[in-house]
Image (cartoon, rainbow, N blue to C red; front, side, top):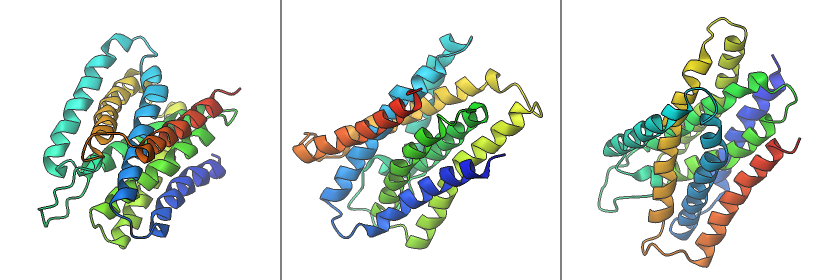
Length: 240
C-alpha cells in the first residue's frame, strides 16, 4: 500500500477546495464563471473518461439503460436540492438549500475514480485523477459558498469529498486481493449511473449559468478552460 498515492489524492482535492476562501467578494460574475468552468469540466471528463470506460466489457450493450437511470436519479435529487447544484438559485427564498445532488455525484465519482488505481502499476493514472479533483473540489466549494454554507461545514464537506478517491483506492486493493471479488460484474453499471448524473448536472450548468442563456467572452473562456484542464488530464493519462 503506497501512502504517497493516498496523500496526493487527498490533498489535491482538499487544498484545491480550500482556495475558494482566497476569492473575495464578487459573487455575481465570478461565481457564474466558476459554474461555467465546472459545468464544462464535468461534461469533458464524462465524455473523455467515463463514457469510453463504461462501454468496455461484455455488458456494454446495457450501459445506456444505466445512464438513463442516473439521469432520472439526478432529476429526483433536484426535487430536494431545488437545482442549486447547477447554479439555479431561488433569490426569493430565505432557505439555504444544501446541494446534495452535486455532493453525492462528485463523491461517488471520486470513489469510483480511485478504484482503478489498484491496477495503476506505472503511476500513469493517479496524476490525472489528482488533476481532475482540484477544479472539482473548487467548484464544489464555490457552490457551497454561493448557498451560504458556513466555513466550518464547507471544510468538513471538502474533507469528505477529498477522502473518497483514497477510499475507492483502498477498496479496490481489497477487491484485487480477492477478498470480495466480482467487481467487473457491477462496476460498469455503477459508472453508467454516474455518467447519467454528470451529463444532467454539467449540461444544465452550461445552459443556466447565465440569465440570458448567451455565451459571452468571459463565459466562453471559462468553458474552454474547463475543457482544457480535462484534456490535459486526458492526454497526461495516455501519454505513455
